[in-house]
Length: 495
Image: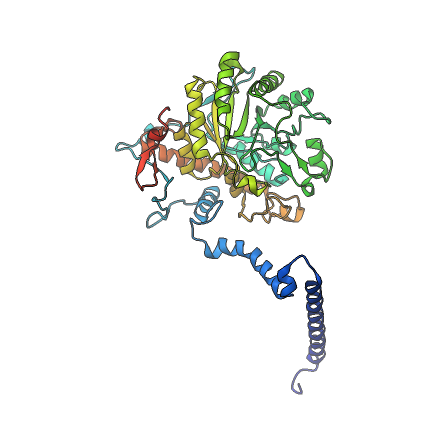
């Protein structure tokens, strides 16, 4: 150190002292952890391998992120693989979505869907915009729209203020509707000026009396907003059929509590079903009541399980009169869901959309109600191929939640049920919300919806029809267990 400048000597001495202190504190910390692990009784591993066993839990936590970025192949991950997410990101950014050197999609597994191209595809000049559809002919204010791909239910509370703002403004730019989710109507839903579908969950948040049940005045107040076009009564949702919505108490802020009509900081757990609805007649009565009070079209959302319910419903509609029918039904899939749900339900309960959607369409056709009751498909439909399949199956509209979450910047961090979402979408932590700019993300939401409509149109034109709602079941083929494919109309011949 004799050749070292004199002013550096005290700095090095200080660093040496700090290093010794840091080393000492590190050793002390390890000793404390050792004693704690050796004396606790909750974990066998930590008791037998103190300190070292803690690394197992740390690496186990990191594993899901490393698999996503380094180890899983493009089409391996669940619930959405890298290829699916990548298309949404590119569509939302409005960048080139073409790929080179052939598809990486394996067409051999059973259940794979592909479309049959027409020898004489639709020319560009013969292509048509999606045809308008009118919902609710017996409501005082029917709703007509040409949108085909809309924002599915995500409650304010489950998602953040900037996320709701971006979705509302983006939906307006794209000319599509936005579903409020069961958390009630917030100012942020209305802010963008888009069409709104007010969802009424089993907790009736936003239109409930403090003791439970409908508050008729609140229903009228919600319907008075010119942007509120329809009401959707939620019976069940894809993530947890048979269980009501769950909003952890950490997310229940003062404003959310006021909008929902609940207490601050208390978890909002909706009943398993609407207490007033215990039969098909009860459901039809509730639909009629909400339609009469609001004057707007009313439908319901459900995951199909005991499918005999739909047959019973159709029979009762024909007995009561066709005006008693729901104006639309939203069929959610067993693999749907954006928020918190028990694994026993999210993994095992309900029918996937691939089976339930064509089944419901066929039931409506069998009873002559297909034109009266419009059908929305929801649940894990985020890419053009899945949405085009839904139109082949007979859907009038497709709704997506997670697709629009990806458009907002979701990275599938699997933190939706906590208050720690790193992209600011499902958290109320202002520091995490800071990165989500509503103006920028609104453009991406609109881009995603517009590019989705464009690419579904490309599939439709290749099949030889001018627009997506003209797709039929004979346009799609499904690979069977023996490796051969059959036309979808052979599996579901009634449409």
